[in-house]
Image (tube, rainbow, N blue to C red; front, side):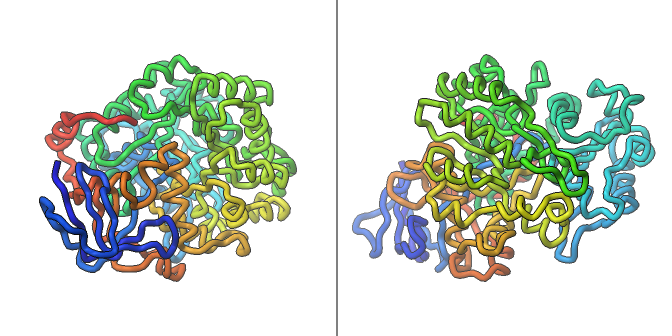
Length: 527
């Protein structure tokens, strides 16, 4: 076991805004001591951090890892969010991107385009199957809206997922979209080669290190896929990543999850997929107690209260921590009602939890549940997309809370929902510091906690991660600035200078097949 002394840094433990120290010792990847003055004794190595600020690594509590890897390796962004708005701003621009991308791909390989911004595109619609057939030269292609809850499929892709092209224009939303995700994943996964996996896993881990992310909560699996081999492959790969991965399996069928139990550090189930109580506001599938303003229609929850109660009860009794997607106030109330009937006392999670009623807020104040949010999306929406003002009545948007949740002691966690959004945690923290409802904004330190202390608790590992303290993993990153004193603009532009996992500085991966094979030969860890 090699002992290391890190010095010449301003170490922010993260326990409070002002808690700093000057020296840190590690051994076998763990922190053994933190000191104001240089400790006595000798060490196998001493490493200067060149006067940098030092912070505990971040935890992205909610993303979809397999699709992130595939998107990085094989897909394109239909649109990009820039400082000047959405690029391209219209369907003609998206067409150009897809045509250029398709012309470089092999025949027969399914194409994937994400981050289509329906509400900001001038035509305010997704492309039809006929348009996609033309743009992609008859290839199978799927285009995902930015919220991940609506999509457009070409004729060939409709056929591959078992939808009669004569019965659909290719544009899917709500349950019609949600219930084909496993089949879509199967179609795309069949064409993912070793080189794609090598490139995608390297790109993912490099992105984590560039942002200072040490652990991700990966919500994986789709119940509509009979075998779902992609999820099994993802688990096999993730056990060898430098990045920590904590998998939540999105199946209702507990027998499917139990086969993975030996690989899990804690039993975890749920997230999106089968465990969605509703969809999204952008797709008009989030379940609200009042109608959408533009359509006058309401969207129902995907499951009855009785169905949710039974599912939650069974999973809780089997020892699983439960996570469930709920965005609209009606959906949030449905999952809270079910979770309130559990008897384990285990910390369960509500994903997104964006528009909660006063009654639901009071339930959350009891401290039984963690809330996992993505305020960066609302930050973008307010300035560029205007989904909420187009679709939702003011009394609903007024329910968006953040500071109130934090002040009430609720375990609030930040996350990206990648590949729905970029993994950038500083965009999400900017969305907290400049929250959609201004009075609900928080300080940079309070935002930082939602990516450190709080998600460590939400993945049931608060004694091992989240702060720089003796007995915890030596996962940290360095930066030139004091994050806690930054302006909003400074938060948006903030980037680490180096990231360390287990006390070892991360070296960017090349994405070669040989490197991937060597990674897979290392000792696997629990997920």
